[in-house]
Amino acid sequence: KIVIEVNNSFITRRHNDMTNNIYGYIRVSTKEQNEDRQRIALANFPVPKDNIFMDKLSGKDFNRPQYRKLMRKLRPGDSMVIKSIDRLGRNYEEILNQWRIITKDKHADIVVLDMPLLDTRHTGKDLTGTFVADLVLQILSYVAQTERENIKQRQKEGIAAAKLRGVRFGRPRKPVPVNFDSLRAAWNKGDISSRQAAAQLG
Image 1 (cartoon, rainbow, N blue to C red):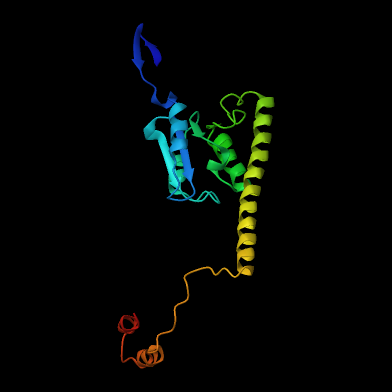
Image 2: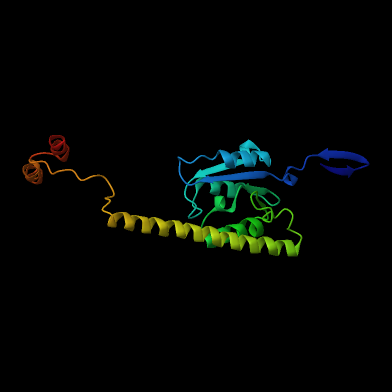
């Protein structure tokens, strides 16, 4: 509260702009993945339940609706809490850029629960601490991106190896119906619609 003296009397009012909010961000790569571990970790921080934003999208970029909504809410002095740096994203350059936007442009703090060194609440006024946090961030961001590239490479190599073993991908091929050519000719002439042709072909 702020107390203002006017003509020897006191007026007390609440200064809402001084309130620092704590927000949490959760990201899972697919709709099937479970976000419970992240949600529990944020609740234990604690982050208010209504201040948690979640995206079920890939971390390859920051074009995520709930993340953008959270960015619009962040004010100077607020804190953004994530369980681990890869929940923020997996693209090295974009993680560093978002870190800069949050800490330098918005003057908000970031807390990475799995990495206490990445807690700008304690390093904002400490040059050495800030340097260490930035250095650790760059290393972890690089590792996160490298792992993403390694995953893609392993998938590519796995698919190539499976093809060499004769594994076929996609839906199995179906035999061409005996009436296919005649129905295609009728469809080309406009005698039947594609829906009618599909129904007869099954």
